[in-house]
Length: 379
Image 1 (cartoon, rainbow, N blue to C red):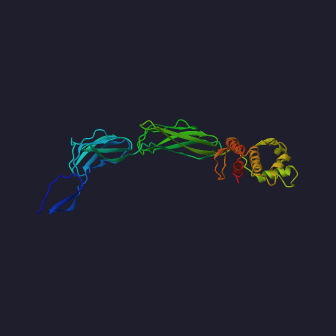
Image 2 (cartoon, rainbow, N blue to C red; image 1 turned 180 degrees about the vertical axis):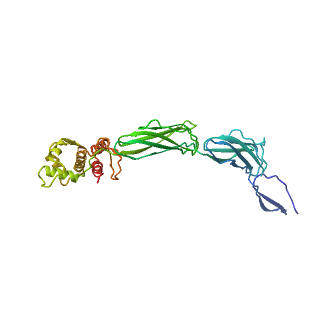
Image 3 (tube, rainbow, N blue to C red; image 1 turned 30 degrees about the vertical axis):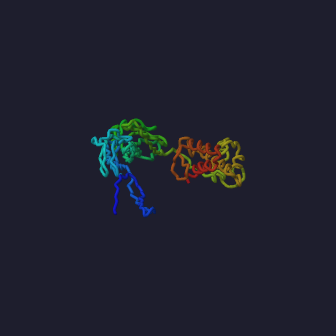
């Protein structure tokens, strides 16, 4: 015979059936089981978020975010909401329920003026069970980068004795991504600097000018400033040197030259000197980094010291440099070469100050090199 039974099952169930019979008081039975698998309840949401524009130019702009919410579970969901940590007014057309496999599209628009990453969250409910999904998007806004560049040139970099007029040209360029206003060009040795205007758009350039009468070697520094719309001030500087030929400047002499002069003056060499002993003595006394040199013999001893340490070599070279100064090879304002490239780059007085600073700081080799370069600049 066939029997049947109907039951409602809402979870995976294994049940056992038993059949029983009687024969003359003997009980017999048989059993069988069956398992019915019920798919688990799986409320699941999926959220996909996109932006109408992932890259904005300087200043930013409006971006619309689109949120697609999918019910990818196996139960219907209610109380659907979408939130965004940076965009507050999200429109989902009033839809708050999602059947299995259904989706809704929501959107939100906001103004962005800086690079922004925001996170959206979708939430749903199934019989008290809360499910959610998240997604993020990043919109890059080009940074505000105001910039300005100054290139300075001169109509003449070398003047004859007595000097003359030099026209300086200042090429000012807006190198940033914002317009610039209140542009001002100044020069520490030339005034006034004349410019055609005081504003520059992106990539725009202008030429400013200034005329100065120079009678001596001159290195001057020009500066430019400009203001961006956000109030940021940008600046740049450039310098140029104009050489004015000096009247009857003696040549710089190397340390070898001065060693010979002192050797002859002290009787340690029978050769012929270019500078007599009386003139040499008039260059003394002098003080080289604390070493006092008052006599010709002391000068000879300093210059001819054998197996000199780096400290002593610095004293030797800078003693020769001071002798060159006394011999008329330089004035305090004479531009001299301090880095062996035969191009004057510093006033003599500033070079001596620099060498002294290096020496006092224990950097004897740098001090020596500054003076050695000066002594060899006319070779």
